Length: 119
Image 1 (cartoon, one colour):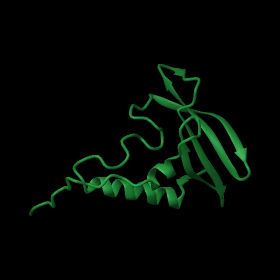
Image 2 (tube, helix red, strand yellow):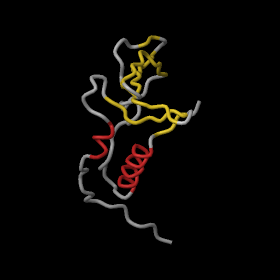
Image 3 (cartoon, helix red, strand yellow):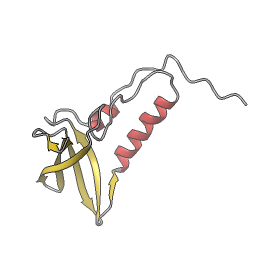
Image 4 (cartoon, one colour):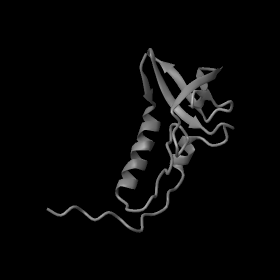
């Protein structure tokens, strides 16, 4: 089974990365957008998976020192299409904030751009 990002999510992440690459200061995401953290755990485990219509929502739990955290760190939304799984979005554990909406939000303007490389 293959896992991919949806075309929309992949495009939004590429745009965020490209915008950040052009600027010396942080103007994009300042955390791991998939794991919803700045400090990744040793490993992660999938918990409960809920199905709503054709979408699935998997609770992802961090595991540190062999112990799985009870509360999930992130909820991954995905769909199955043509035998493949596509991640559509990643939400905070309460499901209030999704990565797609964060990436679609206006980002700060770059006030200190990277200077072009000199040859």
